[in-house]
Image (cartoon, rainbow, N blue to C red):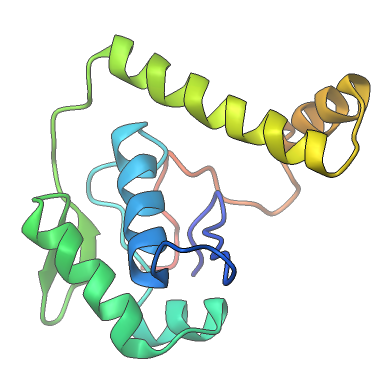
Amino acid sequence: MTIEPAIRVDPSSAVPPFEQVRQQIADLIHLGALAAGRKLPPVRQLAADLGLANGTIARAYQELESAGLVVTRRAAGTRVAAIVPLPSVDRADQLAGRVREYVLVGRRLGASDGEMINALIEALRPRPGSVNPTEGSGHE
């Protein structure tokens, strides 16, 4: 089970890895990409997928739980808590910020506007066999 869209950790970032993971999962929850009740991968699995220590993912999950974004139950694992989504203006602001980040990265890579638009269109296309991030994973 993986989190889609994928979580990425930038080892060159000044932001600690646990915080990068925490922030990305929190953003996915607030934006509705991870729906209430959605099961997150076990700590060990996500740590292995990202090449991080188990404690790094455990800390991210603990921070998310402290913020009321996830609930961890012994036999049921960690699931997205039922929360009230951010008002649409906040979501729009967050999305605009992420788009600006995308454009900055694209510029650093030397990508043209057309290349960035094509990459975005490709990322929006459903992939065969992929799980819709707004639905359950089917791997409960």
